Amino acid sequence: MGKKILYVLGTAGIFYLAVLYQSRALLAVSGAAVLLFFFFLCALIYAKQKLQYELLFFCHTKDSNLDDTETVAGIQVQNHSRIYLPRVEAKIRLEHMGNGRTQWVEVKGKIPAKSSVQLTGKLAKPEFGLWHAMCKHIKCYEWMEFFYLKKKAPAQTQLLIVPSSYETNIKIGIRTRLFLAGGEDYHPQFSGDDPSETLKLREYQKGDPLNRIHWKLSAKNEKLIVAEMSMPLGCNVVFFLDSEGTFQNQKKERVYWEVVHTISQELLVQECGHYLVWQEKGREKLCRKAIRCWEDLYEFWSEISIFQMRQGAGPEQYAKAFPGEVYASWIVWSQKFEISSNGQFTEKIELEQARRQMMELEFSL
Figure 1 (spheres, rainbow, N blue to C red):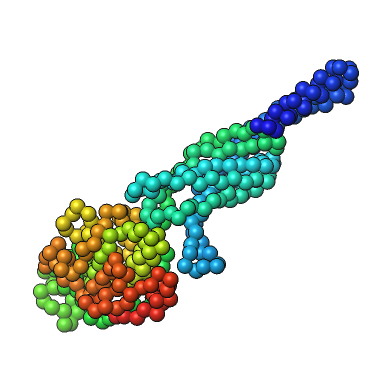
Figure 2: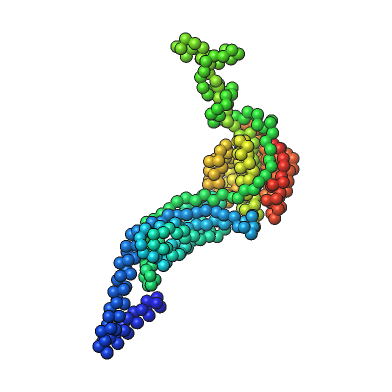
């Protein structure tokens, strides 16, 4: 505001002196000062029409501390005009879809002509989960930065923030791999013995069971056709999250969920389908999420509400909630940061040593 007042007073002063002394030179200077304003305005209008922007989000690990990561939000602005913009700024609004918490990220910078620039800012300790991000407009300032124009082109997207993960050495044993747990999905390649679902049809080979022959198709094709049965895709491991979900100490909360993400990722890498099981406040029955692929894991982080979790998830409660279901192995990750597998205590994780302990952790399921 001060720059505008000085500019107006300066222009008016020059004009006054031009009239007072009848100076054409001063009159020309005052006129140029007025015309310069309209010139910058026209240039800014043109440049604004040539601007495009989109939302950006990414995470990176700080070099100084491998356990600490930053989440960055911003906009990618493309200036297709030949006009230099000394200042462009915007506000990005982020709302957590689970708890409604809102954050604002302010970004600003300058954009040369015919170039693309990333304007970014840091999110202040974002919670994991699904966020909705929106930027309604950006402000473009002219060369003297006296005024700005708004570029209204609302951009919005959804951002999924997941916990960091460590390296670990969990091994899936033969007994767990070959265990045939029931499931509603079927393996697309391997055959099994489930008569309710057919994997493929083929010609009869010596040694095939006679009860697998498809008699109607065989009679139609005048050769024996055998139906291969599908193998159910079950979850052979159950991973119990026995926790209140939130902690008074933010570092404890972060490490707790990073261990969950690490173990679940390792099970997926070894192609071991598993259930993540937890207890919700106000519900007697346990909740669970089948994790058979990466999309399932990302859905878990986008859907779960840690504020509704409480302690009480374990094998006994699982047997009551899902009677008759069988599984090969189970893991309990407790509020006390203790890992147990198949009833045997495995490890107690210390906050400052979590990464090292998970790398050194070795147990089989």
